[in-house]
Image 1: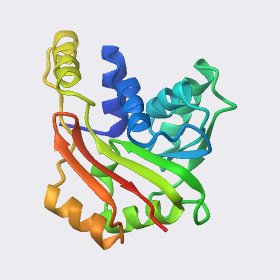
Image 2: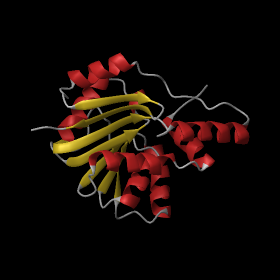
Image 3: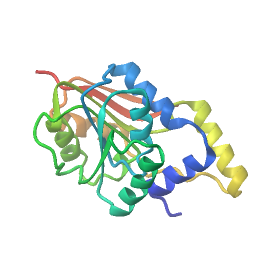
Length: 202
C-alpha cells in the first residue's frame, strides 16, 4: 500500500486527533527550549512546526526536500497566521542548508523512516545544533491512547486499516546515532513511538 509522510500527516489531520500538540508539549517538557531558533526536519505540511510555534517563542525553519510538501505547508502556515514565525526552506537532511551551530532545537516526526543514510543524517543534525542544543527525532503518536484513536477514526471514516510507516530496527538506529558521534542520547521505543532524544555537549 502506498505510504508517504504527506499521506500520514493528512490522514492524521483529517481525524482531528491532537497528536502534534501532544508531541510539541513532550518536546518542551523534555528540553524546556522555548526561545531561539528551531528546525523541523522533513516538516511535511508543517503540522509539528505549527504546534511548536503556538506554545513557544521559537523562530522555526520548516525544512523539506519536497516542493509539494512546502506548498501545502505554506497554506497551513498562512491559515494559522504564522508567516512571521515559521520560515519554509527546501533542504535535504543529508546536507542541511544551515551553518554549523545554527539552532537551539531540531525536531522531526515521521521523516526519519525515509532517510537513506541514517548516520549521515544524524551527523548533519548534530553539526547544525548549537552546544547545549537538543534534538527530538523519530515518529509515533505521542501516546498509546492517541494511536488507538487515530486508527479507530481512520477505520471509521475510510473503512480501512491505518498503514504504518516503514520500520527501522532499533539496533540499527542506535548504531547510526553512535556513528554520528552522538554520545548523550536516549532511545525511546514504546507506545509513544520510536524516538531519539539527545543533547549536544561541549
